[in-house]
Image 1 (cartoon, one colour):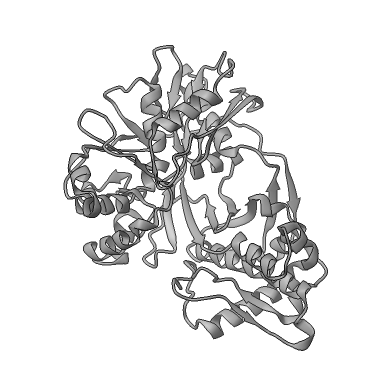
Image 2: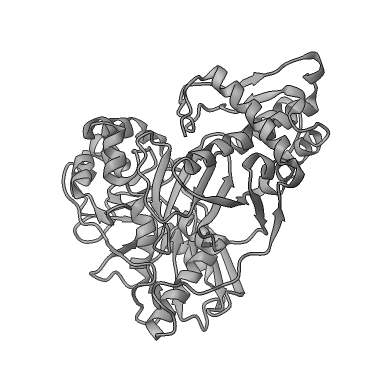
Length: 474
């Protein structure tokens, strides 16, 4: 089961082969006007609707994936103190800065838990609650995330509450490097201690329902999607949303005082460092609007009429400021304007190249810390665009894999459930997940375009360094 911010998807898989047998879907009932505050009961209602019609008949084990960073604050009786705080929650931006200062700076946080507080993280939301809703904050006795809360509900609200390494690593008060909580950081943010769920292993079961269904540990959406894709050492995932993210499997946790790397744990016992850019598909949409185009497909078609390098036109796509490099108050830059480059197709091409070069910068942050990247999985609807597929392999300097669209987070949750089930039955090793085949995918090689792509990338880097000297240090 994958409970995203907007819907629940369920896939029923064969435990041995990973074949998807049945699927279910239901939107979440939405409360208007409070997008950052959600009653967790809405997740259960959506889950029940998605599982209707006998979808779970014959199922032996359930895995739960859910939106990350959703904080569910409970009182001493296990009741929600207030609606869950979800999403990016820009209300907490000031709280994030307060926490950075309170612990002694970004380096102190990177050393403590492998990441610098951001507005979305549970630790920052705790600080916001303490400052803005002190009465609610004082009543908080227990902290769960969305998948923790759903697992607990499915098990009938037992005394034992659990989470997994992946979910815990995004809280801001658990260290992927040490594998332990930092209760002092909870107290720093909230003003007092609170109970935290037990972190169990990737192949462990959280428990069994009264009906005999095994429930696995559960995990966050990012970790579940990586597990569903089957990525391993040497693999990176580039996700193209409005903003972009780059993550890769690595055997060690990475501490990064610049704050560019968030050191997460994955769903298999490895680590999952993540680097985020603020501008990905929003760069393309902005360019399409400027050129009077109605959709990204038209922008891609136009870009394909240009050539690599866009006749010297370079777009630094920092339209909303940028996180990689850290330039929160900057704006985008268009360079290389000449009479011959001032054509719509060259601007269209420059927008695709600028977006992908920004993501290549994020890949370089990981490579600079010793993360091996041999192939890149490219996710998101924009990954299907010809202009993206034409430029990505040479700009990333790696084989690019474009998986067919599927519910990879839900598939990852199912794979985790199959693992826990196999371990409980003695048929699988707790150190080795079930060997499900990888996704059907289109594979793109840099080929003869590698040198051309690297020249385009160098052109981008040159403009970036001229415009923002010293801002980027991978």
